Length: 271
Image (tube, rainbow, N blue to C red):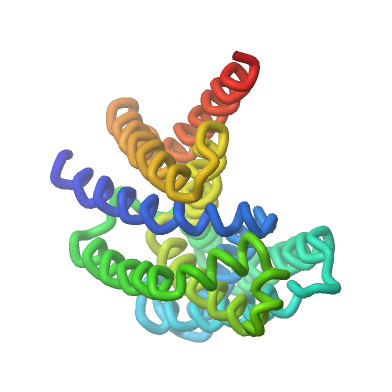
């Protein structure tokens, strides 16, 4: 059992590492459901690849998924601007999500074993991840992390203060597209590994939980990493101990984290 669980532990640590950081950006931008929308687009691209003749979890379906997320990245970068309110961008994200979900259902209707495809899209197969997959994911996310480190000043400024970024002469839409393209690259790989629900969980809950206690970006990042890794380990251990589906067990563990951190944050503010 331990030989099966160790790659899953490693994968969870890597996923928390990149998603907790990206979650801080997403919360600053006020586009909470963009990850869910991009994850759904990635899943749509993958199953469309299956419809075109590629096997699921192969290079062909991966690039089909990646192409779909790049299109989504273009849409989201265009919907953010000085004349676009946060509510309008959230509306655009919601529209993209519901349309891509509907299209995914129509594609699945043309595929055999559609229930298995849908289950794979939602909960993934993190328990059965292999060490080569873990190492490939680590290399890819390290490259994305390096890009974010090199351009950290621009990415953080555009996420937290886009008017200041525009005042410095930066092309906000171009940098937005680069941010969402890198984000889409991460989401595409993460959905293939862990599924839509777990990807959204890794992105939002560690960052939100850390916000209750720390105000600085670096503090939220370190606390989010610590909480995310500990909660992932707890979810995987619980799934093994009680013979539960691993993905949903991790999501539920993060749900408990969200409730506990919210309650603790309220008590902290009253003290």
